[in-house]
Length: 305
Image (cartoon, rainbow, N blue to C red; front, side):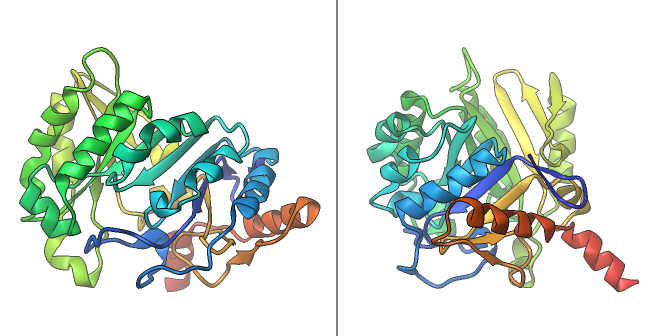
């Protein structure tokens, strides 16, 4: 198992397969790096097979495929099919192409999906993303029917944009959970960036309200998140990465779309290039990257002193 210098066990791998996207969400942080448009310099299926094999052999349990929008890769089914037998292979998607691919993704080995869905109002959704809500709702239906469950709906809450839709979203997700939990709502706090200041709101008050209604809750190992059960609705709250709880409990390591290990989401100055490597040489680079990991906000506070 991979364990860093701060005794954090690394169990999850996030691998970006493209920076291209067919939506234009105004708040998007693009997995920690900012790009304009798409780049052809992406990992091949063969590269991804080697990288995921090495991480699997080193004890990684779960893999999440990210982007950009992963379903824009025409070889996405091949990418999934060459991955080892992880406990879970999941994907974060905007859902616009899921209606087309859901069943094939399941057959290729994908276990479940996260779908970005910030609003159930077509006009609000278009304002946020530039896209059509109906395509995403169709994609969600296909994902559930194909068994890519539990689907997690990622809802980024924004002041005076969609903050009044929480109850509607809970009611919407509950209809999928009458017999089993097939859809989980993830309420996500917007990153507090200067350019997004007008839309930022602390989600603590929302969590307090939900907690009072909850029948029960459980604390997940990942960042000690609380997951609340309200009858047939299940909701989880995700605070921004700029908090010490996130850093101290970080169990993830990332691969950029061009084949660099990213030990920390918040940094771009310590990337480790593994593209084209195999076997022992690849694993040596993985160990090097793991040894570079440290809680980012712990580091910042120490430097401030």
